[in-house]
Each structure stands twice: as C-alpha cells, then as structure tokens.
Image (tube, rainbow, N blue to C red):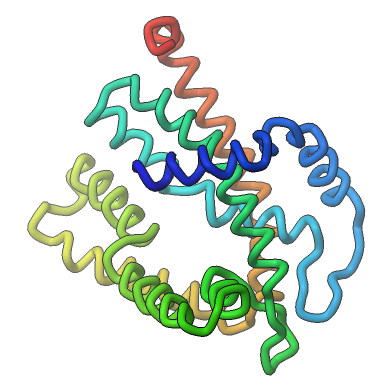
Length: 231
C-alpha cells in the first residue's frame, strides 16, 4: 500500500495532478471516441472496444467482493482510503498506459502487443531486462492463486449453500465444474486474440455496466438511512 499510494502521489506531483486537470478532456475523448463508429485498423481495437476491454478488466467481481471485504474488515472508513488510492492510482495507470503504447511492438500475427514487460525491455538498459522476465513469470504464477474465477466460485458456493442446494462438503465438485466451464469460455475468446476479445467485450460490457450501476444504486437505496453515517 505504501508503494501503490507513494508511487501514485509521486507521479501526480510530477505531472501536476494530470488526472484532475485533464479529467474533462479525458471524458470528452472517451465519449467522443465511443460515439464515432469506425473500423479498427489491423491488429488494433476501435475506441469503443478499447473502452469495453478496459472496463472488463477493472469493473467486475473484484469491485463487489473486494469492496465488501474491505468494509467488513476495516469498516466504512475503508471506502475513503479506496477513493484516495483510486485518485492517485489514476495517474499511475495513465503513466503505465503511456509507456505501454510508446514501447509496444507488433508480433508475428501483426497484432500490437505491449505492457510492463515490453517497456522494461525497450525502455530500460539491457542490464534491467531480467525484470521483464521476472514480471512475466510472476504474472503467470499470480493467475493460479488469484483472479476472478476464485471470486466467482466462492460467490456461487455461498449462494448454493445458503439455499440448501448443495452441502459445504461438495463445494470442491461445484468448483471444478465451474472452473472447467469458465476455462473453456475464456479459451474460446483468448485463442482469437485481441480482435476477438474486443468483439466479445463490446457485446457484453455495456449490459454488465448498466446492470452493475442499477444494482449499486439499488444497494444504496435500500440502505439510504446509513448514507450520512458512511460519509
């Protein structure tokens, strides 16, 4: 947390809090790009697909389970610190994306690829290249221990147990079935590369985002009497 907030604060100061100064411009570009219908160039995404892909990676089960867990453990005050880390994290994300775009490459399939491993390799001197390999290796290992699949299976288990559909002793079977189904669905999408990811997200994410907002407003409405105490 010290690194996340510290780096975000450092970058915010160095850019004169760009995430606040340029927020109206960012919204104008995003909304304008979404409204302009155009075909993606080879190996790229349309503006709308790019927004949907970004939302797919940031808005999901982690926002629900993560926020609920933080409030359960740390109380309503945890929300305030999530706001602070989010505001500072906007500048960190901006910096990461700028570096990823600047140092991106074209792979053998003609698709654009980028990310920390590429801007470490292409942006730093050769003796730092081991960090790119380390980042990639740790990224692969992280997938086995964290991610949305774990959160999804935990949520399904909890719902099925609460409604007495399954017993707590049979969750491992349910988890295996859910894991296989999700693995197959993700494989069908990922094998198609970034183009297919963009096509799938532009169909699913608008529905998910609207449902997410409606349910969030619903939760606030049901607990409206507690809102002053939260602030």
